[in-house]
Image (cartoon, rainbow, N blue to C red; front, top):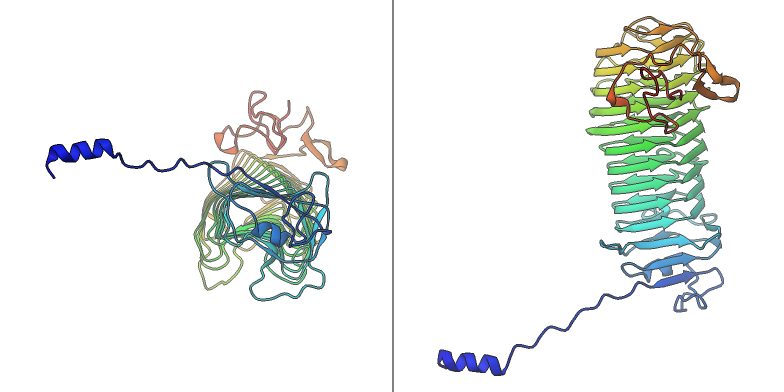
Length: 440
């Protein structure tokens, strides 16, 4: 065919156009204890199990679960997608949805009553798990997950575990009576990145409260309430992997064995860790501790750790022996570049600050502008040794009284953030106030 003939043929017989694609509209499915898994999952004819409902979802779809008790394991098999096509699983408005593990047999593949199981782009709201023979909720191998207003109670292992996941938010969740038969911590974040744990309530549990560990990075633990925990309320532990960029800020911790701790137990490097604006009180052991626990034949390297503007009161009343207590213990001679600044340490029967007890002083340590009320070793510079004067310590109101000596006496630094534990803007007067709260 000549070129001219070819052009004429193309003009007379144009190529067929691809059919226009249309995006499927998101669907909403329903689950109720009175339903059936042979139903279509509509509001009028709901599914009976959460697992069937989850298996029916497509990208952007929503599963609404009516109130009731569901005795099953749930493991997700489908993901949402980007462009606001998250997969949503949520309790019906005002409904109490309980996934109950009573009588269920634990088996090797089952890590939790509710397991994201590697699914991505998820929003999970308003679910309760209880009586789990394993963990309560596991976010495992998943990306972009938001877990909100969920509750776990009476779990053999962790209440909530985040493992090998990325871009995860836990918000407004409650964990109680976790780790009753071992496991890890009440809320565990391990081997994960870009995780936020915000406004959660952890209480009356075994093991630790909230632990960030084992290769995790870019993690924020913000404005949580942790109390009546068997061990430390907040914990950063590298274990055997480089763990870094971790920030604990604005948390309230009390009635635990310890308030918060930083450690590397098995040869990993813990780096760039911040404890800022936390309020810690009435713990049996130390309020804050930089530790050297674990396998002593291994390294316990910690670099760049900052204790800034925390308020620690009445810790060490009931520790394991008569000398293990106090407000701030520095007990890791392999730690480097440690800052202890603008904190209040008060009312602890042993030393408010201690570094010489085990002769494990960190390297390159900067201790300054702390307000120390009570017996203490004296080291650092610019510290005030006097009564802090709180608004109402009997009612656990540890804001500074207008005549407190800690007002405007903190070292000026941008490291502690621009707001205090209550969200008040810092630098209300001539300087930064010492402790977790800024006086208006």
